[in-house]
Image 1: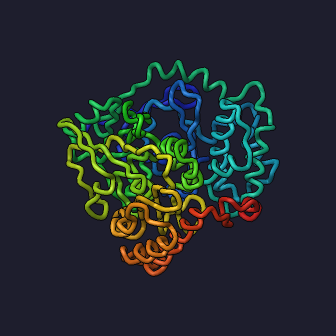
Image 2: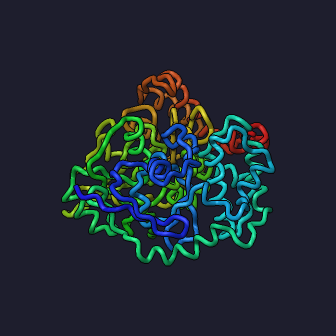
Image 3: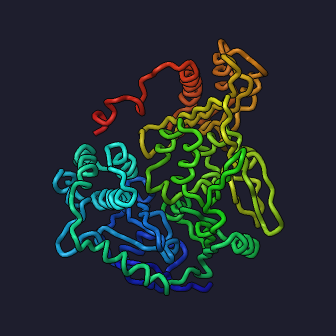
Length: 486
């Protein structure tokens, strides 16, 4: 199958690499083809952050920190790549590097390049937005990076301190920016026959019809693992991330439509805009580099039983829109799945949009995630509950659950307990008992089935406390959290 050159921007120049296989990772390209070994391979599954680099689209001001280990090399076609070697110029360190040095934030140094690149993106983006970097912003930016030598206090100190350090007049990054715009004029936006990169919805649907066997990818945050850990190979990749129509969040009178190529970071920002109570949950969906690469459409289409998006979307009564050259069809999200990693999509169909109803004045929604690690971890159980208030009572309820079945599920039997105008007093105990009986969760490396069942009951108790407006100590609200964590 035809393999066209991969072309991208690096240090203000158009780089062209020949014969890049469709499943070659960006990390392999950086270390083995560009011979830039500052970027490290740690976990090789997007968890530790040692491989973080920054990407930027032509003409854009925002840098996105991403995990290079699970991202395919061809996905950066026409994009601007920045690695840790690119930051210093004429013996002048970037503020991220200088701050880490001054705050003693590095010891063994293996994970340090990843921290530097996450801090670099934070710093550069803050200059554009003119928003100061506080400790909370630093924690979000570094949530996808792990360190076991210095601990996090000096690293977070460095992230806050770097904004006070001057970049100087001749930053290498500024020089690269000037050249990048001109260099991109000659860059191809069409990828190879083995790596299909359509830019319009019509192209995507035609390619899907012609190549139903091609592996669809978005941010590769899961498919990348299939290659790195499962040693799978795909002869042809169909990447949806450049499809203009699917990169938008569209607002309508009664719902928002989130395109399948919208990043998790942007998609959750749209959800939080309508439901501010989701902010903490949104920031716990993996680390920022994963949220920058992964897409909401990819998370939903993947259908993992422990995917965090689906329980929430199910509780909010979201629909999905499937499209092909033959037309489109729409269905409730929970009906998309037929079994473990299986769904109703036909070979020529793609998931195009997720439609989420806007909140009503009477809506009360909460979502809870339980995992072994607070940041950047996979759920043992995820429970989302949305109810419609009727004074002190409930007149409708929807519940989405993850981690208790082969697919993300809706708790239909438990929802039936809530008829019109049911008083809340006493109902939550019935919900708790019903929810624990409705599912038979399995035991695995993350939790036992018995523990998961207990969690379901405990989280209903938590929802009841939130309903009553009780102030509980929690990790996200505890004022002393950052002192404990760092």
